Length: 121
Ligand code: FES
View (spheres, helix red, strand yellow):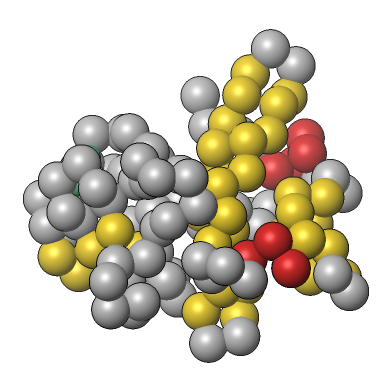
């Protein structure tokens, strides 16, 4: 089951400084007995978050810690079968799930904190 941001609003996901090395961070959040992986990514100074679950086979995109970007640094890469996703909106431009999207996860940046906010929908 996917994480409900409305149940987690206000929780700090990570610090902006955590993104310095790879422009991304894999954050595990716990909600009761459930555990979820959220990827927080920085692209051209903008910080966004997505549920770390590839729409192709519903597995995490990363295999190596906080590495999510491809070698060009322009796309988020699923290491399982090579799908490429735009870091701006999570849309898959190449690979077996082309045309589908990562699920965005609502956040705000407050100082150095990346904080979960309520879903607007
Ligand atoms: S699981 Fe991501 S491309 Fe297949």
